[in-house]
Length: 589
Image 1: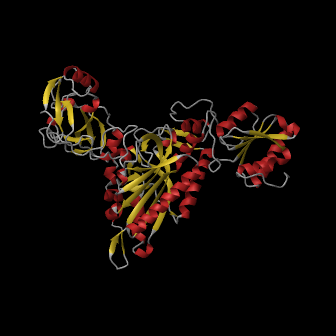
Image 2 (image 1 turned 135 degrees about the vertical axis):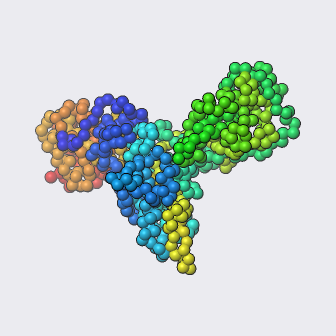
Image 3 (image 1 turned 30 degrees about the horizontal axis):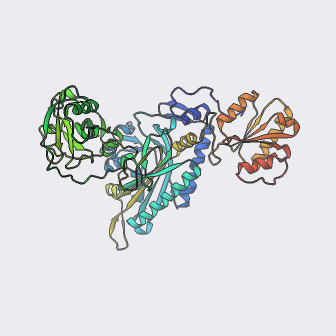
């Protein structure tokens, strides 16, 4: 410790939002260089390297071969795949001294595809699995939570290449199983959920989410086993309802009702129903968004959904990618849109306004609504979808709620939060088609290669594990990830105690147990606090009991403590470090 490049902090960093950010900075594992960009200090780098070791072991076990592509990439392959445009402002672009365009790699599908195209030409070369562990770059608009969402991060990305779909499915299954083994070894609770493919493309994908109350991703699960990121949930479209007995639509005065709550109150007061009171679920809320395409073109979009639900912008964004979505505020440019009283009459691509009108799947044919009449202070009652208006299409726009039915009928949905740790994609032939990756099959015919893509956040895993294992005193690493397995603390000024502790540390090192020795001239209180903040799994305290022939062995995570005789200390600590019963080992010296 007297030589280790570390400085623990007693105060939380001002910008910390989650526990992992707080403790990784306070314990001297990482240091902020700029928003979303962090330096890895010696202890943090050791943890990151342990994550990478686990990933390499499991990737190699399924036949993966490690490569390394540049981070600085030319524009041309990304133009060919369409992602130079699709990524919009989310990538770092730059020009060299000759004016040529480059980017800092966010992912490397194009480079892997071109490398295989360059070297392989026959079905005999496949199947193939390649992977790399490398720094990636994305221009996050709002970097947050330390290394959980940064502009620079370390990721494992791997790619499979197969001659046909059947061979690809075997590769995908092998990757999925490898991911399960990796996350089991990392030691945190996680869920595997269906997900959206987004800018990556492909036919299907799954996410591995570390369960966390502070996670950015919301997902749902049911008692029957359904699990999906909210962006990927598809609401079953209801059967068409008969509407022959529904009265003709009629406009009524509803003064001072710009909100759903005020509209429901006036409707119940002035136009009560015979069967039950009106509720927000009887109203059609029309929300205006501004959609910006990657080329900068903008156009408003109106989403219709039941008034008792809010628009989920993340769900909307996922379905409209690569376009960007934001709340609309340019009402002065579109006088036909009466804020608070917008109705379907002025909406739709075939209407006079030409404004696209999409509705939530709950707004099915035959459903009956109260909605805006496009006049200040007026609403339409008994407006029927399919009779009085026809939307341009459907879009999953509404928030999901606890208790909503699972799309597969497996029970009510439960909402939970998580941190995306891995994402696996069935790419199909998107990149192979774009970049011309074909090989000769058994009949000498050129066929397009089927690909899969598999990402795993190595630096993000460090934060996820820290979040999952820390307590109110600091970090508490699992043994597979800890920078050192044992932290030996010399509490006091006894020269004999320091000498014995140094000899113990040397013997532990020789026994293959990584050890950190606190030999500083600091108070016991400072040393104990630092041992808890740093979070090594086993803490050996050489203190008051030393004169009586004992040391204290503490388990950092459980807090359990026990006295161990000096002569037994080496064997006890070696056994604990390796998670085994006590071993018979040579005496010190």
